[in-house]
Length: 108
Image (cartoon, rainbow, N blue to C red):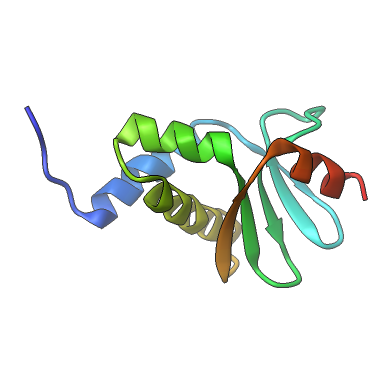
C-alpha cells in the first residue's frame, strides 16, 4: 500500500526522525556541529555561522533518502530545513561532504 503525503508532513516525519537521533550540538567560534556523542570526532552536520552554509555528511543524506524513499537532493534540503529549525538560524545553502571534511574543520 502506498500513501501520498505532502511536503510539510514529510518534513515533520523527518524532523521527528532526526530529533530522535539525540544529536549533541557542539559550538565553536564559527561553527555548530551536530555529533552523535560528546567525544565523537566526526559530525553529521556542520553549520557555518559566518555564511549560513550547512554541510551534511553524505551517509546521513543516504540514510534519510533510503528510509523515507526520497531523492538524495530532497534529503539534503530537508536536513537543511531541520538544521535551520533546530538552530533557529537561517541556512543559506546546503552541501553534502565526507567525514574527513568535518574532522579537519572541527579541530582547526
